[in-house]
Length: 322
Image: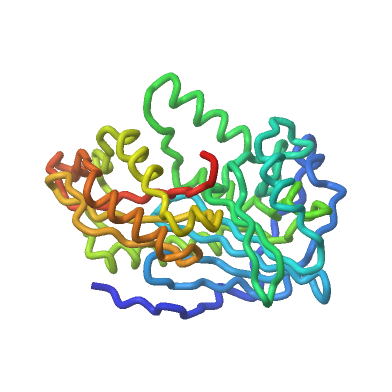
């Protein structure tokens, strides 16, 4: 099993190539927003159950923190943005704006170049003494709007996900030059990330090591003919929602809990690991108790079509009034 460094930071590099500025329609979205230059290198956090890229931007009152965290290979990114330099919109404003279908008000983060902002659900407000008020988006990928639309069309027609080649992925990561933060703070701005190919390559290496750390055969899991598939998913999701921790409900506490289940070749969850520590542990305990008791799966199949041990990762949102 690969040994992990729990909180170690690894500098990815001091000078990552910056792609050329976008042209045409892609240049219009966020073109006139303030852009914050990097004030640190990228750092890679080898955590116990995830990998994270972190970087700071801006100077003085504008200093801003960015974290991009991944919880499984090729999975979506959890995004955290925090700054003291710009007043954040209130929690009530964010909640209302999250249900508005217009880009004029809807909170979002998007990698540039992009023609339209991405929509990633309701953000969660967070706070840090060092960095101030911030926001957490539970899911973001690096594709642009055209690529996401192509993937949706492919899924609708073929009933399966669109496989992106390593070459296509590398081209998109190389062209990225910033992260737009819209309708979260009182002003919109762009973090000048530079090209994302080198940072994401380091992230992928970290994730490969993470799989081995979980006790999963990483090589076999790269060549699955079927990933773990939940059975009767909605029924046990409902059970999770019904088991809202009483003490937390009384205090109007909400949470985002990311869990990883180890799934046996027989399709049973044998272990539950909480991948984040941003919520009250009562939420973690409630989620794992229900999932271990009630979840059922069709197991992953290896290259020969035989069942093997694998994993299943899910984000659970505990929200008052849902």
